[in-house]
Image 1: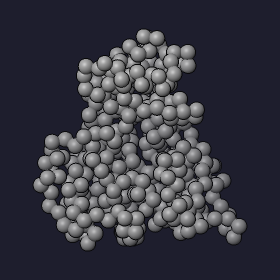
Image 2 (image 1 turned 180 degrees about the vertical axis):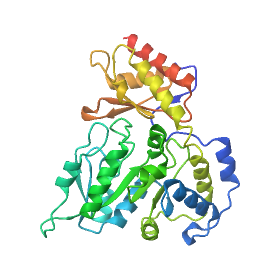
Image 3 (image 1 turned 135 degrees about the horizontal axis):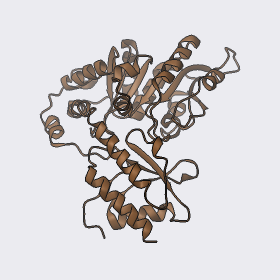
Image 4 (image 1 turned 135 degrees about the vertical axis):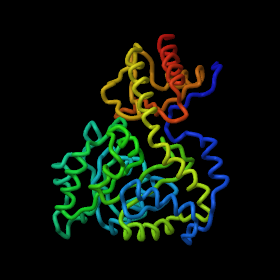
Length: 352
């Protein structure tokens, strides 16, 4: 039985609001955001728009809603979105674009780093023919979750943007963890987003807010996004309490480098443990994916023993065959926690 507190590596969404964030929430000036009169929400939206290099931004309850709204603004019923077959929008957002918007998904293969090939996108764009849906939007994910938290190269984004402009499509970035890409590349969020039309940025993953995302784009895009947010039930009243946490979260972008360092520390440590299969070179940001040698232990037994005996939680079931294990480093995980997790993993695997 464990004799220390839990080390939760299941996701970077499990972070707890810090004392400064709780104080900001408790003292936030509020209004009615549905009427556009909440001063703290307005401040968050101004700061986020400036940070992201877009004319306007909108606070929404979740990243899933942010992506859904973005698709809804860019597309009409019967239109089609081109996106990766491993993308969060396609796999993990409940088929919302099809269910609520009447928009279909046309998937192309994600490459190992999460990027999409230009030739695949080009081939997926429909001809102007009544038989086909209209290709209206390309969605890319950066960093890419199920491709290992990999960063899509800036040159790739620029090339996709040029293709979209040439063919008359819009480009949206699911940037739930785009701040991690910014830190990894040493480029500002505005620089990364210069070639794209719209973006969603999650505040409740590595940045530590309890809830909320930002979507950003042109003034007209945000005007239309507000209408869809209301229609989807995302309009909130005294939302400044949540926006105050979002403002503190934006201050946490720089410290994501600590999570990246801890991810490297964890990955290199895992590579030394017999029975662990991992490619350390693919670990770029705060996500670490690995699997187990089938001869060592089953994934489910490993995960249950690790949690029950040592209080270390990991996410399992990712990838083809559902045998990939994910560790997400975040602001509530220290270097000491990483050392403890590594020793715990070694203990579980060598006890067999």
